[in-house]
Length: 219
Image (cartoon, rainbow, N blue to C red; front, side, top):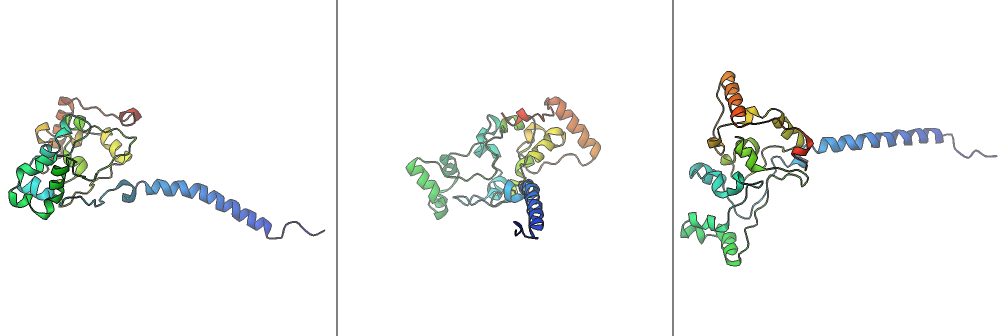
């Protein structure tokens, strides 16, 4: 009676089992590595906007405060985007009639807001409130980077769970006086002793707590 399986069957079976185990282990590991890369987090990704808005001109040269355009940052979860009329009021007739201003004119004519594209995006299952961070003295630059030096805004930080939790564990170094929250150029004291003293004082003054429970961001 001829053999049902060839002499190579055992080797093929072992190879199949080994390949299956490799896939079971390798795929989750590869996904865990991928979600930590800039391809998944969006860090440093360039996002084309409908209008070539240069933050270097507005934030640095003209010294326009972040809250002029992002007026909701102190009152709610979303920082908000400027209404179209905010763009019109600041510019001369020459600029308003320029090619770059076409989306603004179209927005005024149709009543539809300008279709700005989100740069820093949190997953839908993450709750983030701008107002509480601003109220506790966390500067815009901590999450958004030196926007005043960006011609085209990019996501300056990973905004990953690990990155957020590290700050929540030890928020003190990210705190600054509330009146300087929107300052891009502010830096903590140069000496470690002075920086630690300021961090401790602001942590107490603003009643900052280390919040690392899941329900803080996942509600």
